[in-house]
Image 1: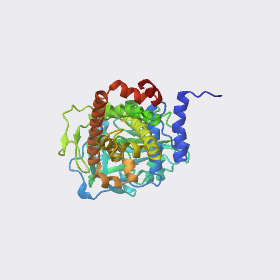
Image 2 (image 1 turned 90 degrees about the vertical axis):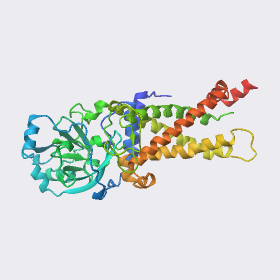
Image 3 (image 1 turned 180 degrees about the vertical axis):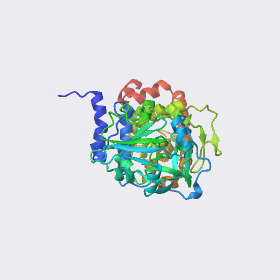
Length: 246
Length: 198
């Protein structure tokens, strides 16, 4: 044997090879790598991207299937003074900066978002804890907002920051999916505070923890190394994989 | 009983991944030890059954990571075993019930092994895939097959329980019919065993 390959190199090479083979695109590798778990998460990512290559929609239901008491977990009412002031004025002061690798960095108010063409979808929310519930979501497709601000061609990830200190990211494959919404309405009314008012993210082909509530800022970037701790999502610190297709 | 090298290798890879899947499955389960039938289910809806376990939300992260790593290994290992078993006629010779055959496994053993390989394993894999919002977006027919996301989760749990039951019976029978001899024949090559035995 002329060349020794360390186990680390081998493990790092397998997801890269898998990504290349299955998606034909090295760019769509998820950001968190380095452990054996990331290896299997990368295989999951690559194989699910292969299954989703034609961008199918997640199932949608009739309104009669909406769950009566859709659970609200984690933050259910952000405690900050500014949030409570905004809440008092029905989020008139709230605005969503969309910045980074965009042609026209913009701050969108709730009214601005509501003026854009909306999409309403009745979908199932699947929490990684094990429960699931159905709700109707109304909002602007993220793709429409990105069109509005003019995504630069080199942008690869959309990073989301929230009022309660969470952050997460999507790559363009999921960010541009028609069911990926900035949702301001739920079950026919305004998005309630326990569910992330004024605006939350809906990513219907991933698990609950990717669907951030209380959005405060959106940032487009070509790499995640400089964003927060560089892992791509707040959940990485707790062992949650960046890609949550299962 | 002599075992082919491929049977011995896949057996122990399967053992390790099965143990990892069981432990990590329990870690995932304790986040929500309630089971439902149909499409939805959460804290306020009636459960089909509920396990008397204390809810623990802190085991999900590592539990999911171990579960999916072990699942990939188990599936790849199982595919190798099944493809080899069909091509080499292993299943036909060793596991299909045969008339008047006295050697090898008896009728019930053969049925149990066939049920596990071609019944429970496919069931646990497919019901597990039905828990994936990505896989079901690509193959919504999985919902029709299992009657909804929560039904699939419940079936996944019950199928895993039957696999665990099989494992327990399997280990008991291994011990009762000569533990050292059985373990050795599943580790070392058949030739060495036959040399030592004869």
